[in-house]
Image (cartoon, rainbow, N blue to C red; front, side, top):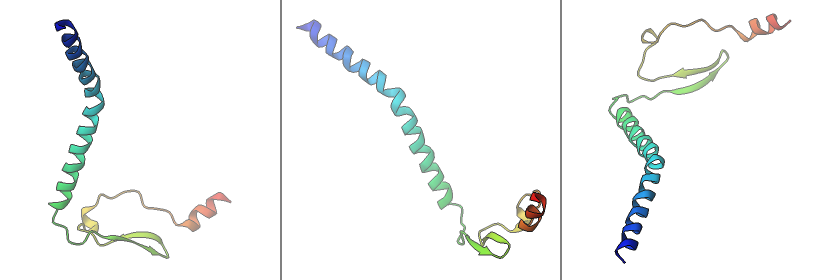
Length: 87
C-alpha cells in the first residue's frame, strides 16, 4: 500500500509541474492588466478625450496632453494629394 500512495503523490506533483507552465503566463497577464488599471487610475486626468469626425478626417479632441507635448512626426497628406498621385 505504501508504494501506491507514493505513486499517487508523484502523479499529483507531475500534474502540478505540468500545469505551472500553463498558469504562469495567465498570472503574469493578470498582474500586468492590474498594473495598467492602477496606472490609469493614478494618472490624474479628468478629461480622457474623444475622437471627432471633421472635414479633415478623424481628430482626437481633449485629453491631458497639449499638442506641444506630443512628438512631431511626418505631416499627413490630404486625401486630394493621394488621389492626384494615383492618377
